[in-house]
Amino acid sequence: MAWSGPGSRAYALVAPTSMGARLTPAGRRTVYESELFHMQATSAESNVLTIAASLGQRVKVLTAFVQKSPVARFIQNDLRRRGVEFEGPELPQGGPWGWRHQFNIADSGCGVRGPRVANDRAGEIGRILESSFYDLDTLFDREGVRTLHLSGLIAALSPATGQLCLELAERAARAGTRISFDLNYRASFWAGREGELRELFSALAARADVLVGNEEDFQLALGLEGPETGGRELGEKIDGFQAMIAEAAGRYPHVGLFTTTLREVVSADEHLWGALLYENGSWVQLPPRRIPVTDRIGGGDAYVGGLLYGLDRGWTPERAAQFGWATGALAAGTWTDYFMPADEEQVWSVWKGNARVVR
Image (cartoon, rainbow, N blue to C red):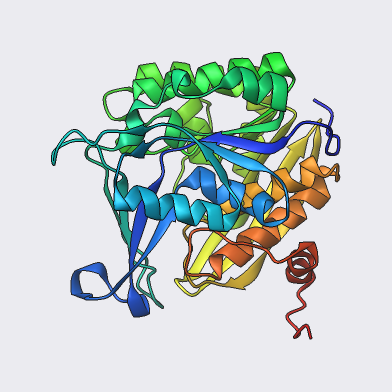
């Protein structure tokens, strides 16, 4: 699909998601020895949408909330603050052992100590999302959506959410909406469901216009052949990714753009950060540069958010990737899983390496 600038469609980005809360120890301490925690509303997909929302575009998450839950109200208030619209029912909790919003409990790491993440997702209301929760006729046919963003995290959450992603992709394709799919493979989600999810992910990838993932994602989620995954030098990762995409482009000819971030961890406080992008036989490489890191979670989501924002603005894929690199670096420098840019100038200053004061 040719990239073009904003049109008459109301929403720049729409994504299904399961909203939850993250608890992070204050002062970069470990979870097990902390008394004070910062709570934020979070999901990978809302992290992506926050970039465009902060820069004035209309975006919406399709989700569900627990009725009368203070956590649900906290999440809704936070989405409003970020400018992210939401649609979805408020469903009864069903008693103390009923539905709730997931909790992500994660420290930020510090120096030579890497971050540790613990997910508490029992009873997660996002596992029962289905298309009947939403007015898709109004969304796609009357209001209009320019890009639908899907993530492997929501696709693999349950059979119901997988079916929702497939139905949304089909509706988007009929409406001429671009589809972005971030593979986001997670072994714990796939345990015992490998065949089912491989088929689902392949079907979603076949419909995508933008396909995001690292070597492990492409091999484990789509079954592509490739080199061994694991801790290797960035140069080897680049070679491996390029070989992988050559095979993926043949298998998924509908995909117009493949991309991945490049990350080498120097310490919890400093990473080498880059990106690769492939479009129509041409490669764009953003060589890894050193960036300071406050909290690494959400950097990849912000890269995708910046990339999709740039594509929606009608920029070349290379310029969009540069913008995404900078929004990813900005997100890694914050305590939250998302970043809210003040304006495009702020983002481009990061790409240019200009951290001078603006008065």
